Length: 286
Image (cartoon, rainbow, N blue to C red; front, side, top):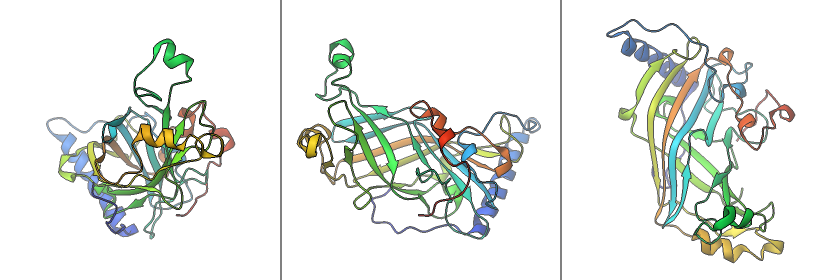
């Protein structure tokens, strides 16, 4: 990745469609040697349920398998499936179209901050959870595809929700007006391409997508504790505000698939799942 100064280039529908076709063909050829390509499978595509069947070109899902967020020693590990970006890719348009559920196509689980409030894990489950801290990525607008869809070069404006029993429900680093901007660039040469197996027909997927961002800006905390009284504590612990020494590294799997493929719903994996109360189709623009 690069810093947030890069402009937001996007792929057109035609280029995206061409990229999907080339990727699928490449994956099939790779699997054809030394054995024939496997038959389509039935494993659901992770995040595939958010794809709107009324949107023309196809669907995109990026599942983070592992990663680390670091700010000068403040570290947050990212586990398999903790973050998913999933949306439709409309024909003849140049933007991702997420499901109309308020998540802008970005689904994150609460991730445990090692060391909790003080930076050192305390006995009795971090004092029965009172000293435990989690962080959750919340997009503030729809992510942008830069270049071909198969570049998996994504700009993600977000805020980080900080959770602890004493902080209340409105403690954030970043905001819709002053977001943390992750430029998710990567080296396309590092991909391994696959086709269908074990996923449904016409599903192309790439494993080993390596992304890295450095020196992105982190605003100070807001809304932490009554009337923001605990903002200074969060700023001290998270080492914000800051503009240097920030790093995000991830390894992901990317999926390109037709809307008919279906798949799992990311909201089923977050806080016990609330997908039943969310719209299952429709779109929300950036």
